[in-house]
Image (cartoon, rainbow, N blue to C red; front, side, top):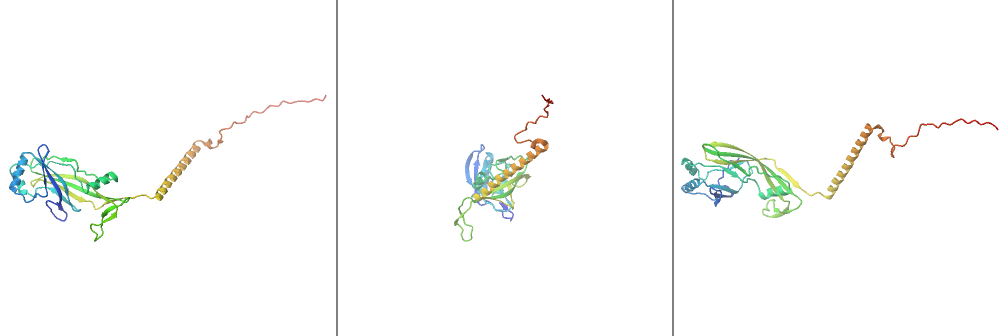
Length: 283
């Protein structure tokens, strides 16, 4: 691992297991990759030669600790560079074809809680990806560039026992709100052919801005205020809509609002009764 301060650590702190695979991908054995130090170069050369001839592979799984500063972590042959150079000079080709089954940052338990209970979307772009080495000569060097964004979720709906952050109270448990941290990242890669040792490099860059989310309960008074606001808004919108419709009908049909409430009435007849003249004579 190399960070921006110039610190270069080999076999860094953490847990890293190497699974030896046969040509069919079945596990033949498991070793602790972080405890393989000060090995005899001749023994390493003979073992690597035999494994290359039998077309074996390896699978790495575990966790390593990184500083929250820009830098990189990589897989290379710093532990035994003379052995790799000797293998290449002997005509053996180091195949760096690889599958990334899972690559994430932070706690897996926190990531699951954020995704399943808090509606977050912590994604790992490089998980379930494959790269096949297809170069005519030289050694393969793959640079992965990761842009990481930190997200923090605080649940204030209940309390748990958390370690104290006050000075002088290290290790003490106090009541506090559960906090979950997740790390999203975007990725891109660069493929190069070099005369150096084959290397896979993951360059890490952390965004200085952190997204913070707080989950809290709403009081009954706030709920009632919001409910009354919603109901009042519905009535106000209905009143406005009714006025627009009624005025629109009045403009389209001028006689619409002059009709009596009980419907149209029968108009009186315009015909006049004809009265005949009557003459009276004395007897």
